[in-house]
Image (cartoon, one colour):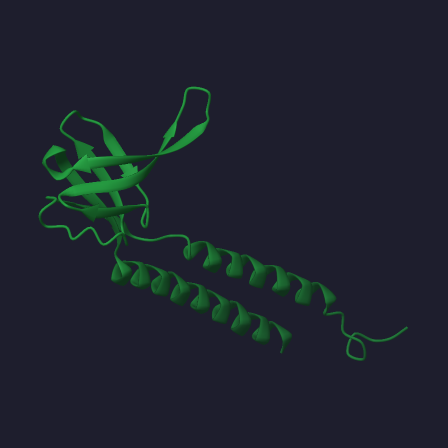
Length: 144
């Protein structure tokens, strides 16, 4: 029979450490999906309609159009857009529409706040690194 010092059994510890690392990596990767978004309401005259941002357009007759980035362009005081609509049969229909600027009551753009998102993700990652370091230090002292 071999003594504990000649052949230590570390298989359980390494398996547990591997599971912890996978959990921490999963949490960190989920943070990439999180972002600080906000909607900015502006008048059509203030917006340059460059096609790079998602729009939510409310017309004078209270229709709300959600338009993806790249699915619209602006020409001669008219917004041309490709709009998706869900039918009662759960079928998505895509169609082209044109909205004159004078018929737009409200225009909202969806933006991501890069600074706040970076601070949140950085803060959480800093906490995760601190926890991992604490666990590693505790395991090191247990082995002594």
